[in-house]
Image 1 (cartoon, helix red, strand yellow):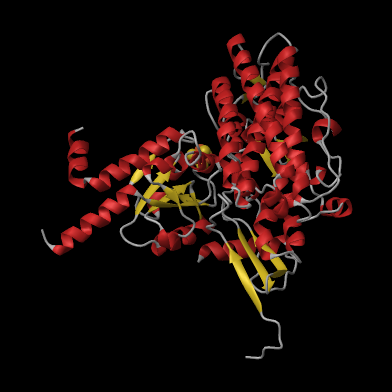
Image 2 (tube, chains in turn brown, cyan):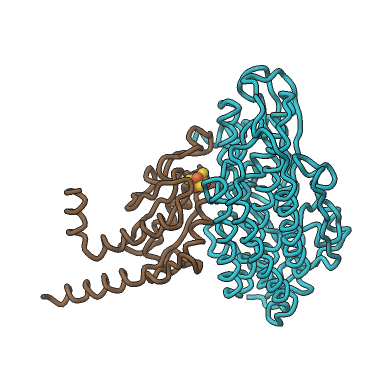
Length: 157
Length: 394
Ligand code: SF4
């Protein structure tokens, strides 16, 4: 095992045990955002997976996006995404983030999240239950820990 | 550098903002720690819902308008339903009206507890945030048991409501209320006696009665300054004529008063819910609605958790509306932030902002024109339209 491997392993270990997330609302109705906040509170308690909500994109590993992308928010979304250090992961929460949801066809909505930035995890629902959001986060962490295994499972399943 | 000139900095906040869940952009000019100017730029969450309503039919719009705001989805749907029912000349059955009131008050509880948590978080009092959100789950459970969804409940239908109360549900609500009532007493105690929190709230962001009237504040923000303004009392809708509301006011107008007013409103909500459960009128849940509505126009006003919500609805004889205009309470209250922030400490600004309970997704359906320089001239409609066309052509 080379030196580089050891460093990488330590990095992955740290990342999986304590992912820092930043949350950006690109035009959602708030429903998804309050459910995201709810997963931090005692009943759901995302902190037991080491998840910490961060204010600054420069410190974050995971970007949680909600809502359809509005024309004004598009540039900001790109900027937030570019400010995050590599490797970075994106979770799209809610029907709006996945497909535009009820806001499809509104004149100021340019589309869904993955038309603007690449998305790793999609969590459907309007809004998804907090349990579903937690499940999405945990799936992402599992994938980080063991990418090859997860992929084969997905292909087989 | 010339040190005699006081140095001014512009502190931009947002739109991706650690404390607020929603995008809004503020610019505060500061002189040292003192805020000397404030401006706000909105519209990051502008989606164009009002326009979109014109291309959908009456029933589809119910679900679209409910998603203007996830926190107060029920009041949006109620305001819309009441307006459309008025246009169509349909009277929903009394049982449906009472259930609307029931859900509206449950929603008020959830919204005020949510605000309590967010405001406490803003003040750095995360323990209170965790406690209030834990207790909020009680009312979320009730809402879920009633309607099947935690956030956008879709309790309303045109002409009535979707679900009925069973005795199991009633028991569940009574039990939940008991717990919440006990907890609310404790919150009132905390926000009026905790020394650290009081330093952040007492005497901060004082809005006098005159200011409140001048700025046109609404909802709990206005009531904390002694303005008795509540649509549930002034123009009772749905079943509120049968279940009168006692308006809670305070006179201090500072942040502490806003905490107290909102918490006292919780007690009022508990009382109303119990009254509705006791005297729930029997009968049908939905009246028949016509598919098309003859040309007419109407306004409908309801009291959202944050203040007066206003709907203007115009029909044109088809199954689609001609125009729907929504004015949400945050828009009325947000102006006060820019006024109050001037002269206060920069550190107090987040609290002042949280004090009005802003909700940008409600707000951002309006268009703000920002001409780039400081000259805020008024634009004519034609200029504005041309600006829009040019902007998007690029
Ligand atoms: S998915 Fe639903 S709850 Fe989430 S932002 Fe969209 S409309 Fe709101």
